[in-house]
Each structure stands twice: as C-alpha cells, then as structure tokens.
Image 1: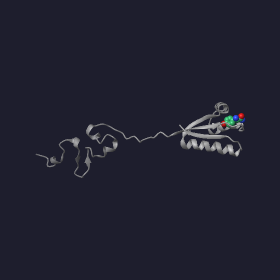
Image 2: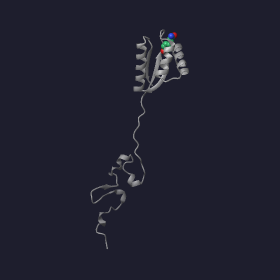
Image 3: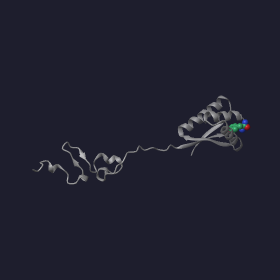
Image 4: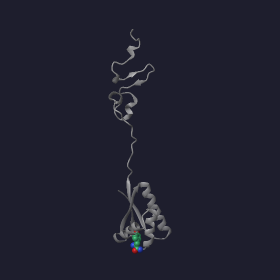
Length: 138
Ligand code: TYC
C-alpha cells in the first residue's frame, strides 16, 4: 500500500524541505548560513565549526628619555618596578638611555603602555626628577 504522506518528501534531500510543523530543514536557507560555508553544510556534508574572531591589539613601544639630573639608581628602580625588568636588564637599559638619549622599555597594548607611562611620570614628579617617558605606535 502507498504511504499517503509520500508526496511530502522532497525529491532531492539537498534542496531542503519543510517539515509538517513548518521547520525548514537543509537547503541554502537553513540557519547553517552562519557557519561561513554559504549554508551548504547540509548539502555537502562538510563539517564546519564557528570560530570567534580575535583581533590582534595595536602595540605601542614605551621609551625612557635621558636627562642630566635623574639619578641612575632611580631609573634602574623604575625599570625594575614598572617594567618588571631584572636588576641586570634594568642597568643595561638605563645605561643605553644614558649614552644614546632614548631607549626601549617594552612593547604593550595601548592601555598597558599608557598605564606604564603614567606610573613613570607620576613617580618621577613625586620625587622631583625630570625623567620623561613616552609611547609610540609600533
Ligand atoms: N643621565 C642621568 C645621569 O647621568 C641618568 C639617566 C639615565 C637619566 C636614563 C634618565 O632615562 C634616564 N644621572
């Protein structure tokens, strides 16, 4: 005996069909369109996975400027405290700035760089040193 519901079945499964309750199954208009394969995952059997977009942050180089008055030891302590440098790296960076006029302390996303510049400038002002710290887009 012929099934009376047979006419409800699609001729081709890859064209999609509407269930008796109205849900669209398969085909290019299924909500698979979010998966970046043009809604073809049903048709082709391709397995896709959504991947949240991650954006690389803009990076900023933070630099110390030389001056004639800030004590070397103060600069070394700032490099250790604000930039988490070892005593040896802090000495090396301080001497580089002392000899060349400017030197890099690190590269950070915008808000981290800005916070470090602010911390250096605040501690320099509180201790009445003219030490300057600047940031520059990479
Ligand atoms: N030139 C300073 C001195 O001779 C030392 C110094 C080093 C100052 C680095 C600032 O960013 C600086 N006392």
